[in-house]
Every structure is written in C-alpha cells, then in structure tokens.
Length: 347
Image 1 (cartoon, rainbow, N blue to C red):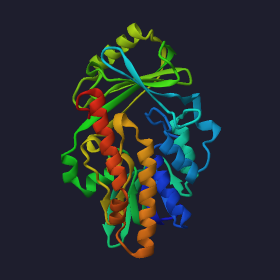
Image 2 (image 1 turned 90 degrees about the vertical axis):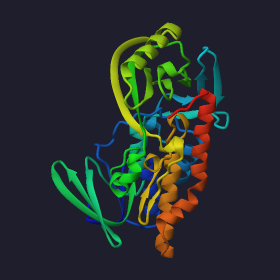
Image 3 (image 1 turned 90 degrees about the horizontal axis):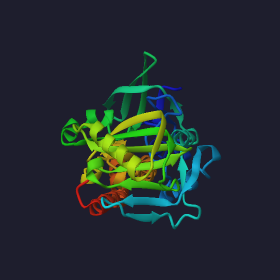
Image 4 (image 1 turned 135 degrees about the vertical axis):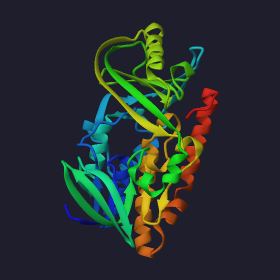
C-alpha cells in the first residue's frame, strides 16, 4: 500500500465499492479501509432488488454463481398482518425473481472488482484535515498506519466514526434501534421462496422477519434501543413454532447490528466539502431495512461527485447534495409507506 491516495473510503460494503468503482474508472487512486477481515459477515436479507441488480450489472457485470445461496431467487416479499392474513409483493419485473445472496460473498466480490486497493483488518481511529489534505490514522494488528488523501468517504454503516467526529452535535439528536438475527438448522411451513415480514408490534418495534438461506431458518426482530430483546424474540419464536410449524435444530449463527432513525425521519447527512457520506452513514436505508439499493446508488453518486469536483474545481459535497435529491425523496416515501402498512410509527 501507498501512503497517499486521491480518495480513501472507510467501509467495504456496496456503497463504498460503488464509489470506488466510479473513482477508479476515472484513473484515480483509491484505498478502501475495512475494519474486519474479508470476506466479512453482514446481517442482511441478502435480496438483490431490481434497482440494485441494474446498478451492479451496469458497473460490475453479472453476479457470479458463488454469491448465490438456495433458493437462488425469491419470488417476492410476503407481509403478514396481526390477524394472520398476508399480502404478497411479487418481484414481477424480474424474470426469475430477486437474487438471494450471501452478503459476505456479494460484498467481497464488489470490493475486489472496484479497482481500489483494500486494507482489511484495519480500523480508523481518527482523522485530521489541513487545507486540501486529510490524514487518516489507522490501526492494524497493533501497528499504527497513516494515510493521506484529498477526499474521504464514510461507508461505515449507520454508526460512523467519521460523522461522530465531524459533527458531534448531529449525533446527539439521533435515536437508535437494535436488529438481532438467528440462523438455525430446522424446518418450517413458511414458503421458502418468499421473504416474510410480520408487523405485529408484540414481535418488535419495527417488524420481525423470516427467510430461508441454504436450508437455514433465518429469523429476527428489531427493537428501539433500551428495550429488552429476550421477551420479544421468545414471543416471536413461539409464534413461529405454533402457527408456522417452525422446528429448530442446532443454532448455527447469531448476529446483531445497530441502526439510527436518520432514514425514517429524513435527517440525511451527506457531508462537508471533501468529506462525503454514503449508504447508511448518510441516512439512506429503505423501509424495513432494505439498504443495498440505496447504498449502491449513493455510492455511485458520491464517486461521480468527486470526479466532477476534480474536473470543475467545484465543491464535491454540494454536487453530491444536488444529485442525491431523488434518492432522499425515495427513502422518505418508502418509510411513509411502511408506516401505512404497519398502521403505526416504525423506527
């Protein structure tokens, strides 16, 4: 690795890789810094919606076979009401349905094909800005590493170390939720060709979900921070066992992550000058937690904004703000739709 890059991106998810691809295509030097070892696990449904697929195929090519899991495609989303009835939202615009992937393999494939250099197991601990140069201080295996660049992109997810330092006052107004997910061997009567969402508030403050990946029963829930997880998860598990014949074998994996209410309240934070935020770190997450499409879209926009700023000597953050208006509107509308579907406030 070098010490100097045109742009440094923190986070190797779809938003960071999409931004890197745009920059690398213009011949700019890019470093992706990732705190975990790649490929890294990511709690996610792993559904590639049409918008995501279009962005990926345009910029990265066809999805390789190794990122898919069985069932390879989902027919749609099935949302269950409190009374036990359900409404299907089929993926009609996609011939086979929506691809079902492992996020670890999907994200790693994007990063490897982004054109960026990658430093995994490398954690950003601080950054400082002086004029047009940004110094990023990192730690890898106990060793201090320093890099400099003209532009910095946070693709860290909802909790951003960079955003916290850049604007601590903004952080004070955020509310947080916790998402938890189990992977069990087992079986269920729920159709494995659908991704299932349960809107009954006794299962969680946002919603509870169920889907099948490689024969594993994947289910979880999301709660406002401060609420006890165990009672909600126990109630939801019991419901799945009694109403949908869930039979559990050994626990294979359990995982959790945090999310903010930036997306549901429209409190977007796209950046300042030559420091930009993409995906969840900017507040882009669609209703009920679908984030791959907005991550890819905002990554492309941010990467292109930096390229334009370099060519025109204009402010990258302002270009990004101007071009991201449609994405902001789409996110806001999706959460209003979620509230109508659930008949209550979510997140």
